[in-house]
Length: 493
Image (cartoon, rainbow, N blue to C red; front, side, top):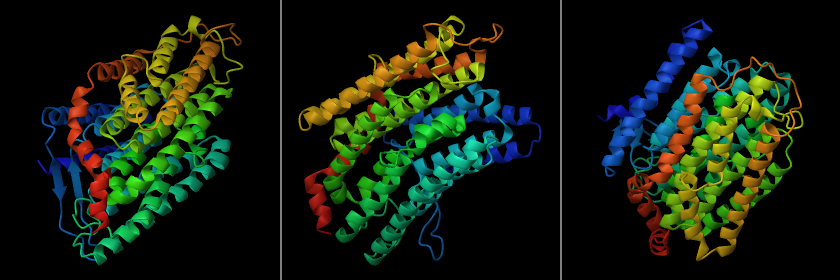
């Protein structure tokens, strides 16, 4: 059973190699779709097994690599198991329902490789291995952007992404080096192993926290490191844009690495990090209000909500941590649905300029319903998983940080205003452009994916308790690590 974890990580890469062997674009896409659905089924079964047995842990380890003092160490537990279906579901949704122009052979390979890298980050229990998957996960997007047929994307977006690629990679590399050297000097046999009990010497804690925070703020597009993600969602490949936003590798880095490795620094500085994220969420929610392009407006709303995940982590209590983890699932699902809905509109009208759109509901009522329902889900309408997540985060904040809770509510309201504004502007009012009457509403595969996403959001909102129980031991461990008693103990090591 231990090799199952490695197989889960390897499967997307193997599928990408199989797709590479086919010259016919249609066959390559069909293979990608079949694999994505099969992979989603496999990891969903695994997640259900973990739901039934929250204490279950599957790990696969090798001997240490000579000279590196690192090893192949993968682990599936209650923290990582629910994220695998999220990444697999995003990949399957994109490959099934994205416009055909977005699904060339190279795009299918990119989506599969990015999914494999996300699975690697979720399962890695060795910091060097995790960092390798983290950096490798940035490569498919930069390759796709540089190969884009759109000259503007190649000249501007590709260069911007390259800059943030470097900006986000350097600190994670430096953090790995600092952790390795400091733990080796403290006597750790495997200084990169995240299950290694040898703590990081107290003097290195603030530096490690700063470096990892720098990496995760860049990856999570928190202001002032935010400008690349809304543009990526607007102009970049649909699949890679959704996988970048929806897989939450940055927040996972905080849960898996930051708090366990440097609990004292996290206890002291995580609230500051959450305030930076909150300010970013407010800023981007305000920027979303004035956007004239539907895709960019959605991009700013998604980027704003991504920052709110860190606000919940900064609350430090069990409710805040549970809320943040549920919010991660909500944002991943909503991002998939919203970006696909905008891509469907773009494919049918050749524009997402709100000044040219109007009256689309008359011809595309199903797309209108999908966009509207996902918009409600994105701002935490009752009955959705975001409603539960925001309720938990607000409960964690109201007693000790009421002004932060008020600001979080303000962000939700602002994003709700943006969603309603662009919805009514695009789908109602006077039609401003001629659209061929033969252009169809949702096709069957699009309809299935759109309403499957909505159903998943509703199902998780109605019955979130199983997910909460699955992560209870992880959350309890993080709460203990962030408590003053545990932190003082670590500081005395």
